[in-house]
Length: 187
Ligand code: IMP
Ligand code: MG
Image (cartoon, rainbow, N blue to C red):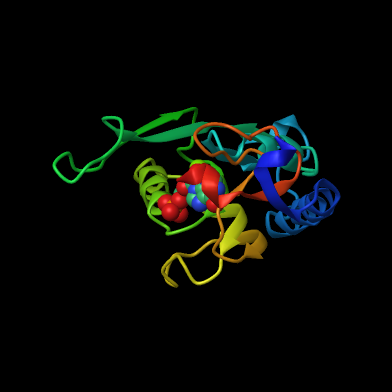
């Protein structure tokens, strides 16, 4: 795997420290809802967008001193690869309860900003008590400025990155750092 990575952009220790800070930032915003089971409904529901956010999610929730639940959303292009004759359609599957809950969407990376509004709208339609979004990475200047996210781990340049859950062709998710893939592997 190492041989396929051109350079490490964020090493695992840098990521670990930032995820710890993010946990604190998030806990501050939510105050201290759900300190025990009786105020369970005041707690937060994290909604990871599968599959890229799983490693970030696993680390983040262990830095969150809050009562919390999980729901999951999977979004995919259908059918298979989109072509010009076969327009891009998306299939969204949401499992778990978000109605009446304080929902925090968790995603790995905000790039062009096509995916996130689809998930945000799907959650809004289900009537959450509140809705916020957290992304680990955001590519500078790519998503429309009006696309609002509440928590951002790192702003990065417009590069294709893999590792820490992020994939290329479903590979490299287990690379422990976030690295730039060698360009020739993507052609
Ligand atoms: P967007 O809809 O263009 O914002 O992209 C959303 C999704 O594309 C992300 O959640 C990732 O799954 C994927 N993606 C975008 N950029 C990268 C990257 O640099 N590496 C790996 N996946 C990416
Ligand atoms: Mg994704």
